[in-house]
Amino acid sequence: MVGKERLRSLVEAAKKARLRAYSPYSGVKIGAAVLASDGAIYSGANIENASYGLSCCAERTAIFKAVSEGARKIVAVAVVGKSEEFTRPCGACRQVMVEFNPNMVVLRRGLDGFSEDGTAGSLLPAHFNPPGLSKK
Image (tube, rainbow, N blue to C red; front, side, top):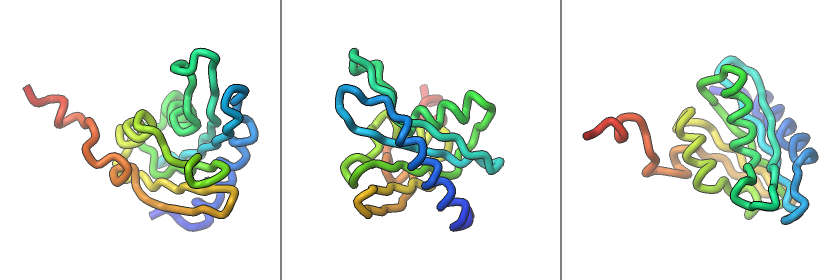
Protein backbone atom coordinates (compact mmCIF):
# COMPACT_ATOMS: atom_id res chain seq x y z
CA MET A 1 0.00 0.00 0.00
CA VAL A 2 1.25 3.46 -0.88
CA GLY A 3 1.21 6.03 1.92
CA LYS A 4 -1.00 9.11 1.79
CA GLU A 5 1.97 11.49 1.90
CA ARG A 6 3.59 9.76 -1.07
CA LEU A 7 0.34 10.01 -3.02
CA ARG A 8 0.11 13.73 -2.17
CA SER A 9 3.65 14.15 -3.54
CA LEU A 10 2.57 12.35 -6.70
CA VAL A 11 -0.38 14.71 -7.20
CA GLU A 12 1.90 17.72 -6.64
CA ALA A 13 4.35 16.40 -9.25
CA ALA A 14 1.46 16.05 -11.72
CA LYS A 15 0.35 19.62 -11.00
CA LYS A 16 3.86 20.89 -11.74
CA ALA A 17 4.06 18.79 -14.90
CA ARG A 18 0.79 20.31 -16.11
CA LEU A 19 2.50 23.70 -16.28
CA ARG A 20 4.91 22.27 -18.89
CA ALA A 21 2.18 21.04 -21.27
CA TYR A 22 2.57 21.89 -24.93
CA SER A 23 -1.00 22.44 -26.11
CA PRO A 24 -1.12 25.27 -28.67
CA TYR A 25 -4.10 23.73 -30.53
CA SER A 26 -6.54 22.72 -27.80
CA GLY A 27 -5.30 24.91 -24.96
CA VAL A 28 -5.92 21.94 -22.64
CA LYS A 29 -3.13 21.35 -20.15
CA ILE A 30 -2.80 17.96 -18.46
CA GLY A 31 -0.09 16.80 -16.09
CA ALA A 32 0.63 13.28 -14.92
CA ALA A 33 3.08 11.67 -12.56
CA VAL A 34 3.73 7.99 -11.94
CA LEU A 35 5.14 6.23 -8.93
CA ALA A 36 7.38 3.29 -9.76
CA SER A 37 7.67 0.28 -7.48
CA ASP A 38 11.14 1.46 -6.39
CA GLY A 39 9.65 4.75 -5.11
CA ALA A 40 10.84 6.96 -7.97
CA ILE A 41 8.43 9.53 -9.40
CA TYR A 42 8.36 10.39 -13.11
CA SER A 43 6.23 13.17 -14.53
CA GLY A 44 4.94 14.14 -17.94
CA ALA A 45 2.61 16.55 -19.69
CA ASN A 46 0.48 16.35 -22.80
CA ILE A 47 2.36 17.23 -25.95
CA GLU A 48 0.29 18.20 -28.99
CA ASN A 49 1.24 18.18 -32.64
CA ALA A 50 -0.33 19.87 -35.68
CA SER A 51 -0.88 16.33 -36.95
CA TYR A 52 -3.17 15.42 -34.04
CA GLY A 53 -2.50 11.68 -34.18
CA LEU A 54 1.12 12.36 -33.31
CA SER A 55 0.21 14.01 -30.01
CA CYS A 56 0.94 12.22 -26.74
CA CYS A 57 -1.11 12.30 -23.56
CA ALA A 58 0.43 13.19 -20.21
CA GLU A 59 -0.18 9.72 -18.81
CA ARG A 60 1.72 7.95 -21.58
CA THR A 61 4.47 10.56 -21.50
CA ALA A 62 5.04 9.90 -17.78
CA ILE A 63 4.80 6.10 -18.10
CA PHE A 64 7.11 5.96 -21.12
CA LYS A 65 9.58 8.19 -19.29
CA ALA A 66 9.57 5.81 -16.31
CA VAL A 67 9.92 2.71 -18.48
CA SER A 68 12.71 4.26 -20.53
CA GLU A 69 14.57 4.82 -17.25
CA GLY A 70 14.19 1.16 -16.25
CA ALA A 71 10.94 1.03 -14.27
CA ARG A 72 8.80 -1.98 -15.11
CA LYS A 73 6.05 -1.78 -12.51
CA ILE A 74 4.09 1.39 -11.90
CA VAL A 75 2.13 1.40 -8.64
CA ALA A 76 0.25 4.69 -9.00
CA VAL A 77 -0.48 7.50 -11.44
CA ALA A 78 -1.87 10.96 -10.76
CA VAL A 79 -3.60 12.87 -13.55
CA VAL A 80 -4.29 16.58 -13.07
CA GLY A 81 -6.39 18.76 -15.32
CA LYS A 82 -8.73 21.70 -15.06
CA SER A 83 -11.81 19.59 -14.28
CA GLU A 84 -13.23 16.06 -14.26
CA GLU A 85 -13.60 15.87 -18.04
CA PHE A 86 -9.91 16.65 -18.53
CA THR A 87 -8.68 13.93 -16.19
CA ARG A 88 -10.25 10.96 -17.98
CA PRO A 89 -7.48 8.84 -19.48
CA CYS A 90 -8.11 7.94 -23.11
CA GLY A 91 -8.29 4.30 -24.23
CA ALA A 92 -4.67 4.21 -25.34
CA CYS A 93 -3.52 5.52 -21.95
CA ARG A 94 -5.71 2.99 -20.14
CA GLN A 95 -4.17 0.12 -22.12
CA VAL A 96 -0.65 1.38 -21.40
CA MET A 97 -1.51 1.65 -17.70
CA VAL A 98 -2.73 -1.94 -17.44
CA GLU A 99 0.35 -3.15 -19.33
CA PHE A 100 2.48 -2.01 -16.41
CA ASN A 101 0.05 -2.91 -13.60
CA PRO A 102 -3.72 -3.48 -13.79
CA ASN A 103 -3.84 -2.75 -10.04
CA MET A 104 -2.15 0.62 -10.50
CA VAL A 105 -3.85 3.26 -8.36
CA VAL A 106 -5.25 6.05 -10.55
CA LEU A 107 -5.71 9.43 -8.87
CA ARG A 108 -7.72 11.93 -10.91
CA ARG A 109 -7.64 15.52 -9.72
CA GLY A 110 -9.22 18.65 -11.14
CA LEU A 111 -8.08 22.14 -10.29
CA ASP A 112 -11.78 22.86 -9.72
CA GLY A 113 -11.79 20.48 -6.72
CA PHE A 114 -12.76 17.26 -8.53
CA SER A 115 -11.18 14.16 -7.00
CA GLU A 116 -11.60 10.47 -7.84
CA ASP A 117 -9.50 7.38 -7.14
CA GLY A 118 -9.63 3.99 -8.82
CA THR A 119 -7.43 1.42 -10.54
CA ALA A 120 -6.21 1.02 -14.09
CA GLY A 121 -8.02 -2.30 -14.37
CA SER A 122 -11.33 -0.75 -13.35
CA LEU A 123 -10.92 1.88 -16.08
CA LEU A 124 -10.33 -0.82 -18.72
CA PRO A 125 -11.81 -4.13 -17.55
CA ALA A 126 -11.52 -6.02 -20.87
CA HIS A 127 -7.92 -5.07 -21.65
CA PHE A 128 -5.37 -6.87 -23.79
CA ASN A 129 -2.99 -8.93 -21.65
CA PRO A 130 -0.16 -11.42 -22.22
CA PRO A 131 -2.22 -14.55 -21.39
CA GLY A 132 -4.93 -13.49 -23.83
CA LEU A 133 -2.44 -12.75 -26.57
CA SER A 134 -0.72 -16.13 -26.22
CA LYS A 135 -3.88 -18.14 -27.03
CA LYS A 136 -3.72 -19.66 -30.48
